[in-house]
Length: 295
Image 1 (cartoon, helix red, strand yellow):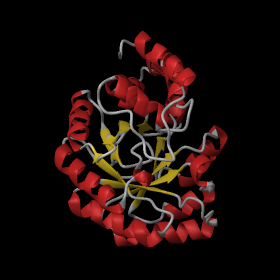
Image 2 (cartoon, rainbow, N blue to C red):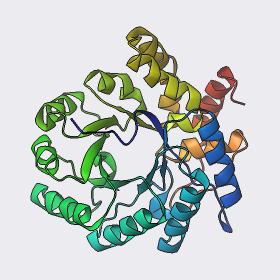
Image 3 (cartoon, one colour):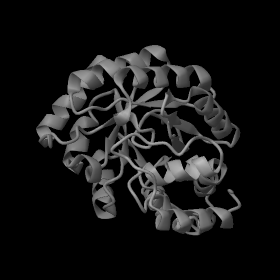
């Protein structure tokens, strides 16, 4: 087993508030404070939900620096630093370590469709270059490449590679991965609708989109499970399933950005080619939010 997980429970894959003028740092700071006061266990900055791939390199770095300063050690900060070009990921990862990130979330290279040997070499190069632990991020629906269970087992041998954010959606394959790594990598759900199933496999928590809206409730779902209240944890998983589905009715982060704007945390502004949520999907999302008294 890994000696100490980066976090246990729920980490929010935080949105990045933006306006036509750029990143809204005042809104980002308020959002960070609200998440921490709500009891979230960790924050992921500038990942997929944080629109890291539509930030310029300068903006990406500044978002990481500002967030580390604002979080100030109150919860672990995990910096999204993956790229489809390895040297860019190394540079950004080193910077994140310098400014105070506690860990790095490194997605597989997108569009390139690297081989499994290529993934092993890439991740080992990044891990060799940094001083903070790495969580591997597997999301083949976005990247076009899938980390195979045997590849995870090879990567688990590097001391700086400590965890997996698994968002391949295939529970059978996740079971095979859990068996292959034999506890050498901490497993986190990358899909809100699979949180409890993955915890039941020995997972340490979830990197969540839902918790942007419901930090306390998402963290409580995990805490119930770890207290041994599996039925209570499952109850929350099923209760929020319609809202989870609504948050993924269009590509993330379009729906969650719309939701957070309705809650008053940011403008409903996305950078092209992301566009505002379609009205029929938005009506359903807002109806569910009203049921939860979020708006």
